Image 1: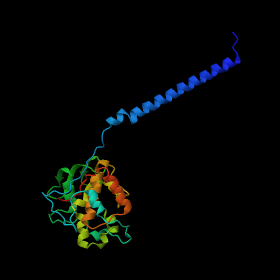
Image 2 (image 1 turned 135 degrees about the horizontal axis):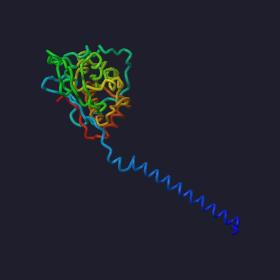
Image 3 (image 1 turned 120 degrees about the vertical axis):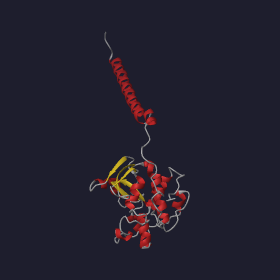
Image 4 (image 1 turned 90 degrees about the horizontal axis):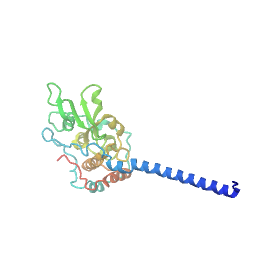
Length: 265
């Protein structure tokens, strides 16, 4: 049988169209499978991020409150943020840790230094060193910055794995009003339990003197409490925020409009 050239061309064209349709359907199938395993049913079943949403603040059984410069505003953290002055950073070329007093004093005069008070407050299953009612040897806690369960063991190297973080870093406080505080007030700021949290050592080192604009905890479930705690400390000690810092805090609080301030009460 003789096939005309035009019929042959029509057959070739129909063949190409058929293959194009097959390729298109295959691509659509691949895209559907990708959606199914990412944004589809498995996204619904994805577990929420593990980790604490808050951290201990005060334990009246063995701690005494540190008196701040001002009382922490009660109620909404968002409203307290609006009450903070907004300014630029002051120079930090004259910052020294000693401006906030000797590290880990017994400011509340309960017989134990601040570091051990915070470890005792934040850890569970606390074990004291032999012959001491203050010095913490070991314990476990839900670390708030990473959301992981962390074991603390006292030792020359192992102690570094758990550090006591100043929620409002002292270097940040120095650039945002602490230079105008008295030495006694700065000492209170550095030892106030509202401003202290036991934290993962590497996370604390990464944070350094950063504010909310430059560093937030990896554990997103903890960010509302963390930001509210920073706001509370800044309000209590008459510190200010920068505009980028305030913007970052507002973005966090937008996810938790009912977040309250944090006090030692």
